Length: 189
Image (cartoon, rainbow, N blue to C red; front, side, top):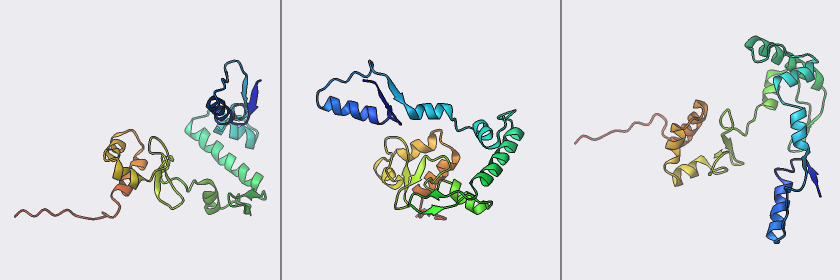
């Protein structure tokens, strides 16, 4: 039979195949049609400035990726979002109902910023205890402190790799936490 689902090609189908294989049942996916509704959604409703401008402003973005055109379009999208969502309820992850979209810089910042990220791009996040964790690679989910303690070369690898400088600043601040303004004194006796 063919299969369809939402995000099914990344979650449901691999899980189903694993279960069949654990039971020694062959499950040939090459002879099936796999329809992932999420892939259709993402392709048909892209999350780009051009698509947002069309959706919120009912206009086509001319000169996309030019500084002036993108700045004006972004401003118009924000104004349209404020107007469109000003009295719209939003269910917070904890179940509270709020109306977060208001014409207020602080409120918009709190609603749009990802406070789970320790760095700007999300390579480093925070766990539930507020400790910095890696969001990628072989140490994903581990605290930086734990990684630096067990994998002595990892800090050097991160500093030499092509990470944004803002990410490296977070990594340095964790590595040298507690050493602020410390001076090493050598006794020359």
